[in-house]
Image (cartoon, rainbow, N blue to C red):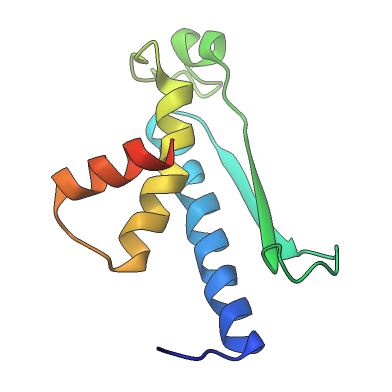
Length: 115
């Protein structure tokens, strides 16, 4: 069994949180918007909780995207479930960075299980 130090665990959690939030941001941008992604050290002091947490926010609403952007461009047509896809982006990014698999069917199963 592998033994990790608290610092190694925290660094792994930081990486996972960063990739998770970046996954959301990437999909916001894919659907024609912009997003912010931030992570910060969890200050709860509870060792049972993750050491790092994050948050992402979008600057895209369905109405804005359908109307085009301020520069006169045209936003892509959005699927009706775009918010679900953005939410899943974080989980998929974590799955990819974990290195558990590169098999798309296994990734789909992992996402389904986690959701």
